[in-house]
Length: 223
Image (tube, rainbow, N blue to C red; front, top):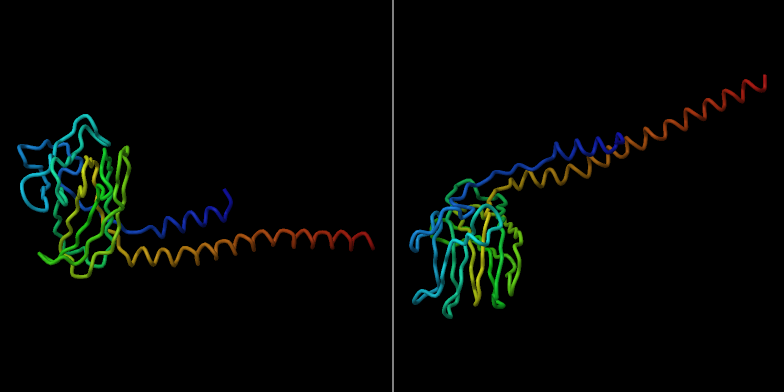
């Protein structure tokens, strides 16, 4: 490995971003549903009589032995599986949610991953991933957003907004210090540029030394 490559690698490591994992309950849905209760999660629908069947699926899992599935059984606006996480340290930080999702015969409104930032009962912001529609195999979906300054809780979950069945598994949540990320991004190009300049300078020193040797030989030959 060249000196330049080593310098860049060390700079990238030094400029790594500070991230903190946010624990979720039953994030892999390994704890089975008891009646209508999903350990660690809540189930909600828009209104009216129950229009969704939510089950622990031990035959379709992206991670571990089971996943969770939601199937619409009657026409309804949406059904939601969600978990609330309370924290006073989220404000101003980038929050990243990842999960494995899958669909079967889902309509155009889709199976959607969602994060809702709140200050107690007040909704400050809500972000949604692109809807997954039709029939899809397991796919990792990532959703990122900066939490508003007064955030003291975030609700993470999955909405079925049309007909069909959606699955979720291996849910992860973490916060990223935005200031550290921006500082690292600014420092890396400058530091890499300095490293490249230093590496080029080191390379140009050798021909100069060779030139001096040639001049010495030429001088010796004329005497």
